[in-house]
Length: 85
Image 1 (cartoon, rainbow, N blue to C red):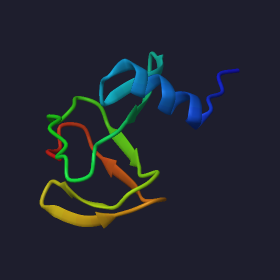
Image 2 (spheres, one colour):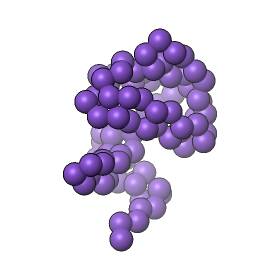
Image 3 (cartoon, rainbow, N blue to C red):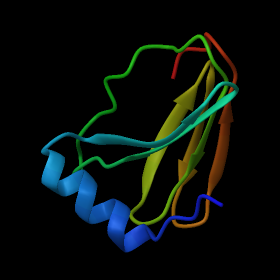
């Protein structure tokens, strides 16, 4: 079984010095932790895979395609493959 503790993932991500930590990768799925500082834009480009974002803390706005929405702790956002966001 693969099980992860958020506090461990946060520490690993911080120690890496990078905003993104991929902590699970199998043929049909990858899962990672992506941390942005307050006011920092997400500069990622559209991906070739579907994505799901789960907001753990903080508040922000997300643009997916032509839609814009507010997000906060507990928000879950689906982004289809190749959709600008």
